[in-house]
Image 1: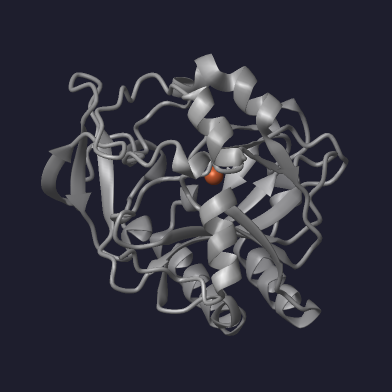
Image 2: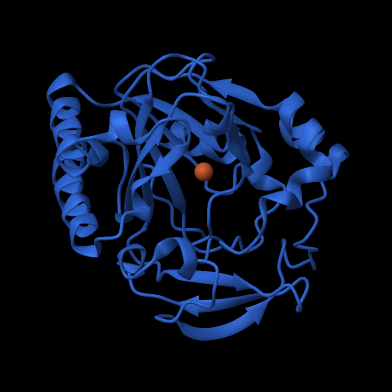
Length: 287
Ligand SMILES: [Fe+2]
């Protein structure tokens, strides 16, 4: 039986059905403390983030990233303990969605970082600004985590969704949030966000959370070995080991230990270069 991390059975059943769950979790004091960490880490964000989407994981100081991780976890743990059990936090990433047409986030699923057939993994997205239609709140294709659970590697291209893009956009729902609310979602749930057309950047904090017993693994997709993903065992702090995240995430993980090559989507072969939606199956999942 899969080991889960949501405490509440209702939350767990909502997660299994929709793949996303919204909870009002942070009070003003906690928000202020998180915002203080963000400002200390990134004091000039309003001048530096003009019109794109920024992820703190691209920052080039591993030590500063680890400090930010430890400080954020110390503040948020008490709140997360209200919702989660038997969990550990692998990564902490501040995100700033700048203003303008280039601030969109393509259709994607989040990375696989553990064996999701045995253990739960969740992305936990803290809204540090309100998010809405104007500033590009996240859209989710609810239930899509039950369509494809194959191993999702950094090296899979966003373009794999190009042929089903119109269907995903039409059938996805926007998930607006108030400051302090948190979206917990299954990393396999398909999501994206439209550009921020408001006049302020939108700030959020994202945590990669997994069952405490799960051993992190990340995948490498070699285009010459279609349908297969190479699995590498990595340490719990792997997010902070990269010397240069932007280039190293696209190659075989140098710090990982090769385990095996797999092809899996509920044990079926899957063409990783082209995402195909079984529309009938999706309708039955949603109903
Ligand atoms: Fe994402």
